[in-house]
Amino acid sequence: YGHTFDYVSGLAKAAVALGGLDIHVLGFDGPFALRMPPHVTPHTRALASFDHAKGDTPLKQIKWGLQRISQGRRMAQFAVDLSHRLNCAGVLFESFEYYSLGRQIGRFNRPLRCVFHDTSFNTHQTSVPAALYKKAMAHSAARIVSYCERTFVHGVAMRENLIHNLRL
View 1 (cartoon, rainbow, N blue to C red):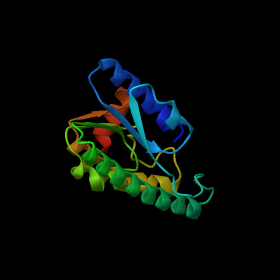
View 2: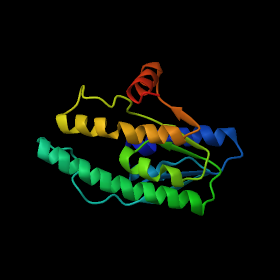
View 3: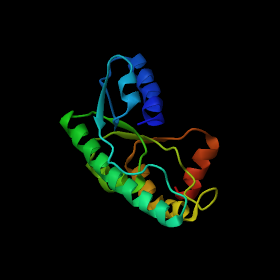
């Protein structure tokens, strides 16, 4: 939903340009799902109805985080099922909720490749509940990396963060 589909559609365009690939994109329902480039098949899931604003109090942020984990669990399961249904030869995914993906990662067909957007896993520049979540998710993120043939980030500093914070 939102920027995720916009971002992934760019990756899909690049993959289509390579030729010879059957491209499927999985995401939540939303306006960008209809903007996929030609020769790309979108697969969407409805977003569970909850307030997508993180909230302005620690309790609201914790509630939001638990709802996000629940949503991520359903999406990770759907992604695994879709990869098996399509008999995927490989999967490239933008990392989503790390706990859920870390629990399902071993069930995907291989090879796997991942794009990480958040590589800090620390307590800087975020709220206390978000910082605790990030710290707790470092193990899940390391598990994801261990199952992937390749892991991508958006720059050198992010790569260094990933290596340092996950002790790779």
